Image (tube, rainbow, N blue to C red; front, side, top):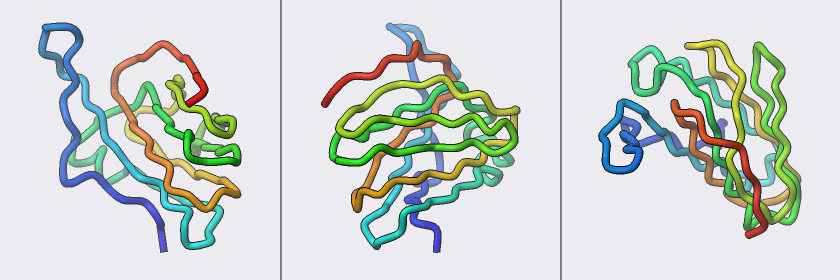
Amino acid sequence: MVAVTPPKGVGFKVGIGFEPSNYISVPYILDFTQGNTVVIKDMFQEQSQDIIPFVQSLFIDNSANSAAISILFGGTLHNIVTAPNTQGWFIVAVPQGQCQFTATTLGAVKVPILLASMMVPPSVWTA
């Protein structure tokens, strides 16, 4: 059983400043509370339905987790590791239309993430 809470049907558009834009963000909750340490997500459905055509940035809220979380993207093997009790934005390197990832942590928590089609400068902070 995949412990990922999918978006409620669609992503949401993101505006930059006062200008409307075509950037899309899709939120997920990675649920590790059932004792699982690995969550696997294939975004084929979201990308084939054009909910989010490509991914450039990832926000991870690991603030409630006393363990690090690792998100490994298939295809490129791009691995993002977020330290315990931190949150931040990360650049994602995946081919368009092929966003798949595996998330791993030892913490028994829910970790909110946000996949975005816009480039957000990377930054990490302690929560």
